[in-house]
Length: 145
Image (cartoon, rainbow, N blue to C red; front, side, top):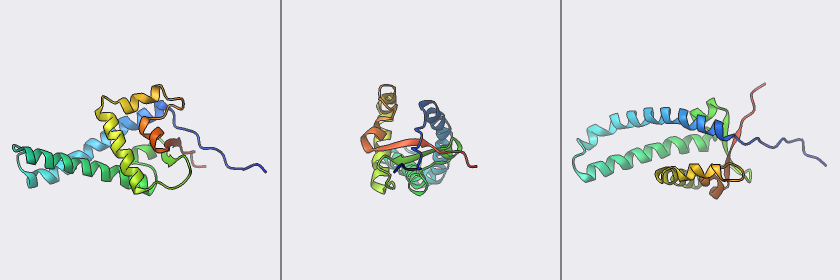
């Protein structure tokens, strides 16, 4: 018996890069608003503890942004625009732990000169390193009828 389900189409590298560029614009706005809220609390950032507290806060805000969207629908605002969704390869829903690991690995891969993203150029399926390691992937969402 043959299944009528159609396998999801992976998002191309070009589309994923477009999503990242658009996401960058949105993330800059999120960081700007978070900074506007936090700077009066932290102060002028002269002391190292102030800088670390501020940086940790911004990292937490970014994680909350991505995790909330990934856990709710698998799509951030940029991903919705480009019709891309984050899914697990085994079909199960994304968990908080997996979202945290993905964010951490993606951030680390970005901090290491983007190596986690450059990985897609040599990966057989053109996946980013964090997606390959965690069993997630970015797929295209079909256009609504």
